[in-house]
Amino acid sequence: MQEQLLLQLVNLVQNLSEDMQWIKQEFQTMKQEVQTMKQEVQTMKQEIQTMKQEIQTMKQEIQTMKQDIQTMKEEISELKTKVNKQEADIRWLKEQMKENTAMIKAVRDNQLEQRSIQDAMRHEIAHIRGEMATKQDIAYIHERLDYQLGRIARTEEELHMLKKAN
Image (cartoon, rainbow, N blue to C red; front, side, top):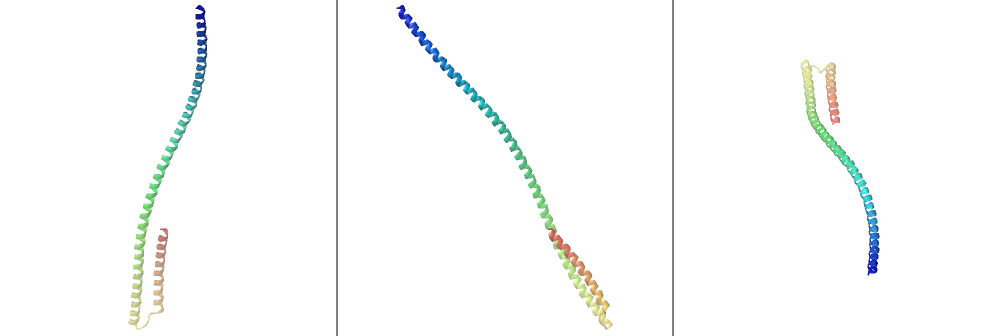
């Protein structure tokens, strides 16, 4: 019986030894898995850190884009203001051109009327004198007419330049 007990004890020790061996192998496997997991966690930490930096860079780029967009909005607003002012100036210039054109027409009509009156007066004077207008009278009339036509031409040229400016 002692032998049997001893055999059982030996078997038990062998089983325990085998179990211990198996536990050691399992522990070794677990140790390797933990080491692999540590490496993976370290890699993930590095990737997360890289992503954080990339996100920070993206945030900065987005902020820069927002500032650029705001600057563009301000420039567009300024351009609109300038365009509105120029449109108002153009409307005013057109109004002035209309007024100037009307004044030129009135001056031209007045000149024609004055010329007609002068001609009638000269003929009347000549008739009263009993003679026709002298060469001196005609030269004087032509001189005045040339002067008035020159003024009209300058005014029309100024109008043309105003129209061209628009």
